Image (cartoon, helix red, strand yellow):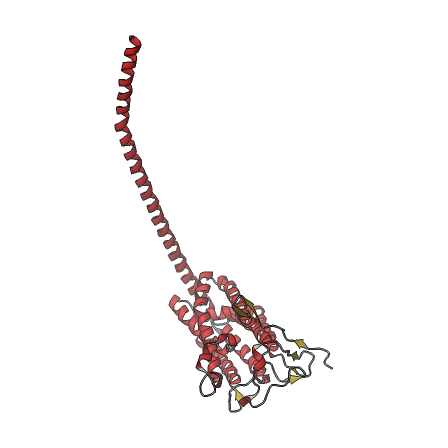
Length: 357
């Protein structure tokens, strides 16, 4: 008898009228909000502004979402390309399928393009984003819990995940390479809650960056904090991915996402080493950001002053029109007033004459 386990949610979506809202999407949105909030706090401490964060997010978030979808499609092509797949399924993002590695690649590309355009360091931006990114990824993993998908091998541990008959995306998930083996019965089996493992791993990484790594930030080069993030996330994802039993493409007997995790670790180590030798000092990158911020604030003040001048000019023009209209009205009154006085005198004349009679 199983005395302890982690239950699965009984719902994975809700409806408002004809609109279906999946908890998977809500967890992703919540993660993005938290990442932007943490980034804003760290970015302002270095001399940046919220507008800079918002502009970068407007570019990086869509780029990341597109990259996440494309990476997923590439790694499981049999679901989207003939003869077994359907190309139209690529657009059905509501059915799940967003790869974090692809989101990372797409987001970095988008952010790099924007940072280059604004002339501040993309590596400094990446450093500021690193802990928020881990928090966002942790929150996003709750979506897998709601979907009852991407769980690990069967286990007898007391924190094993118990599935149910809820109408979730993972209900029809095929297990193991080749799809020839059906998933074990969720009614009689507990599974490793890989979503929980990754949540804990990511939150620990975020805490380490904020409370430990940041203490040595002055000794690090710009971008090395992000390199540490890459190594940490890649290490965690590699062993967690090897626990999973969902259908996946393999290369040399290893799941593609494990290979991706190994590549991320390698990139992080190379980036850290290269930056140690050739990277810019954080103080120089922060000074550059402060110069960019000063320039942006000056432009904003100039636009505000111009808008104020234009508004003042419009008000003066309106006052001038009103004064001209008032002057014209007074001039018209000067013409008619003597005439009225004459009429009054004329009328008074006969009255006086009548009185005399």
